[in-house]
Length: 341
Image 1 (cartoon, rainbow, N blue to C red):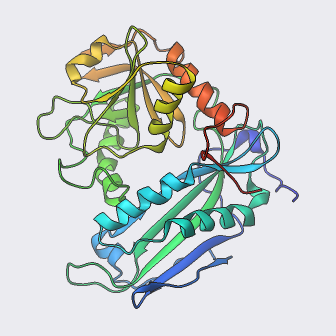
Image 2: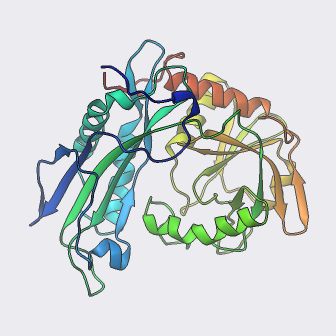
């Protein structure tokens, strides 16, 4: 299929409408067959559950053109499983996992002309999401839901390379100890907006959230998990019941162990340990790993030995290996790459 006339090299990380999106509706206790449609408009009741009580969840993944010309997605089964967990926690009907993968595949295939070519630095971002669509005025789950998948081509998260970020320790809490921090609920991200805007106003790139119970342990940022590297090259990731189980983080752990032969620890990370780490990164779908150079705790600065000019050496190896797997340059573990075309 002929590609759209898009300046792939200069794409930003934003929304561009594509030709098709998938829509399925839940009513009377069952999902309909769903369909690919052209209309990007969503029409719902003014009293819809999503508008009144934020009953919505979502996922994010990407489609890539590999070195050998295939169009693939990366571990969509884990996105399907995570959406299932989100739906169960929010009292929403589960969209079957096999149908999730098929819907993602069909939507990408229908928008093949928007999948950026290999080597362009761009990818096709995929956003599956679900929301309560019928009128709900009392505080209760909706009875009807809509599941949708849209795509949009995006450029690299960092133009000109990933420069280390400066983050601050936030005075706000991201999630309650037994709340919804472990699922991808829209309300989690709404809660983080004030804090991230405030951080940007004060010259910081992101927030580091500590555990709300004791404020002594590292949790995550508003939209990414932390990954640390010790001075003896051990990879450490925080473990907590209120951290979102990042697919990128889980994949990087496998890369560290099985591809790079590094020791990995998934455990509680005390904030007082941070000053002793050699490298720090934020990991997620958008950028894979965003390096962190400085962490500011009110009037105290922690400057990572990896510095403020480039990724640390272990972080760079992790980034290069995982992106190599995603783009087909490095052989992937079984089941990681889902071929669409």
